[in-house]
Length: 418
Image 1 (tube, helix red, strand yellow):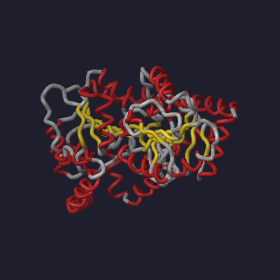
Image 2 (tube, helix red, strand yellow):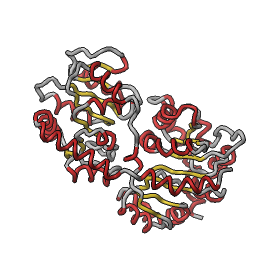
Image 3 (tube, rainbow, N blue to C red):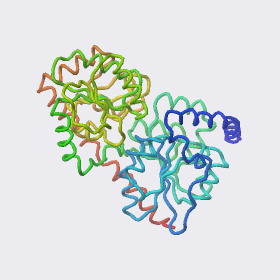
Image 4 (spheres, rainbow, N blue to C red):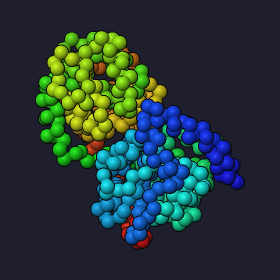
């Protein structure tokens, strides 16, 4: 009954939801593309083996799912990947091309979810991280699909919300076939909220492979950037670039600040900020070798951040100096780069804590802290090497989650190879 009320409210709010998509499409035109897919009009199943449906809300979740999807493809399964955002869709298209079917996820209303299931005919649903929708899960289970939650995590705020809405969330979590939680504490949270089958697998993000062309591309990039020492502001949000600039401009060396906004459409705003402060800069999309007079380099393209992580000396991970919740520190950690993060880490708190406890991550909260961290790491080789080693040790200690997840899911899918 409560799910019916939830669905009715969603239907009533649909005009506002569509208006929001239109509004966002003014800045990100791809939001308005393939709008019919959000109403369940996914490409029709063309016959043959039923696909595995992998739902990854945005770019970070799609990157996290990469190796799992590669394993599914290697086993001969067809895969359809659904995303909520254009950045997630772009990541899926970039990583897999035509090897998977890439679509926008349907809105969580019975009509839309039912239409999607009837058109796609999936044999299983794998949800990455914790993008949980009551109708998506309930109707998938009703259709006979096993539903797996991989990389399961809940922030304290989310857990409180699920607890308050227990009459709706407990049946939803209880119907999930299996939850693979990132940590023991997360596993306890899921069990306490109604999940019936939970194991602690770790995070499959630790098992991400580096691109085969990483060494070559990093060498080329360092040459392109005139072999300058690089401080990288990665996945930044509004408000963070100002703090990083204030901290960086106090340095008096040859360092280059690379700013990589989380959403590429924000590049125009970052460019306006640089111009307003008369800071010399260059855009990556120009394709020109670095003019050594420039202090800042603006990474305004998608899909190249990993190479800048490889080329940098220090990596600030964004979404953490402003109240976004923090982004993934594992990419720089896997390359042995000292990490800086602000206090807002609710989306990644358990993992960030491991890097911090090991001494691989420095806490910063404002321009003063950030400047001090920049200056220390640029001048103290011993500290840099200690943090680099600690980051690699954290990564090595946590690998293996992908194997544990695949050992549980793949045999079940082989038995259900329709």
